[in-house]
Image (cartoon, rainbow, N blue to C red; front, top):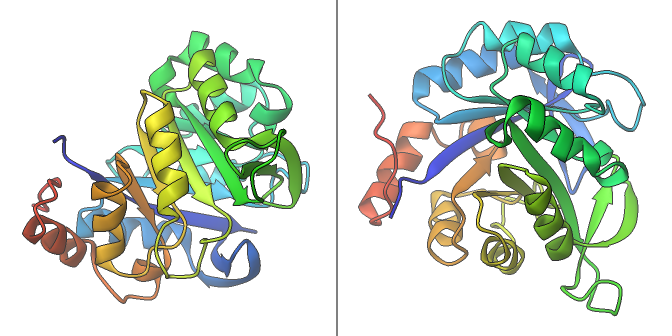
Length: 259
């Protein structure tokens, strides 16, 4: 089994790291640059930066904050929020990101994925997918629907079908966020993660719901996730990255050693 990655998510609103539950009730909790620096010291494998209101506000990403974070870390760094063109992608990479996360704009214009993959390489393009359980129907055979604009707008698109289409268009990996589990600290949406990871042959990052180290173990072992995104459990200092990795090692889950 390949080493599993632990990725910390920084949801950023108006220049501050923020956290909510099920995409609602967000409160500011810190400075993203300082937090990124601390998590890098703790040994996190990667960082993800989301400008969470860029798409809904129909504005460009806060590129100056992206640049400030990038200057303080030396690990893979993925950035998303309001990215809707090749120029946006270029500017994010120029600011120091290694990966570009596309979500709303990709649903509205799927060719953005293929264009980005052609110019920058599939390894740079991450599909951010926000999915919600709605029950099975002819339109949504998996029972999970894709939502956009920070989880505000349902699209009538099946999550599994969208994951497969994005893979075919050239996306390099998928960051799968369960709207139902987001911020609850009650564990990842294992069924959704298992469905997506089994439907595509590219890495799947589980996101939404992590509250304890065993939640990561469960999503790795039971749902075949390649990586796990965490936020609250480290933002509120319930655990360090080292403590989480030590637990996973004891459970037989291969992780990258904290030096």
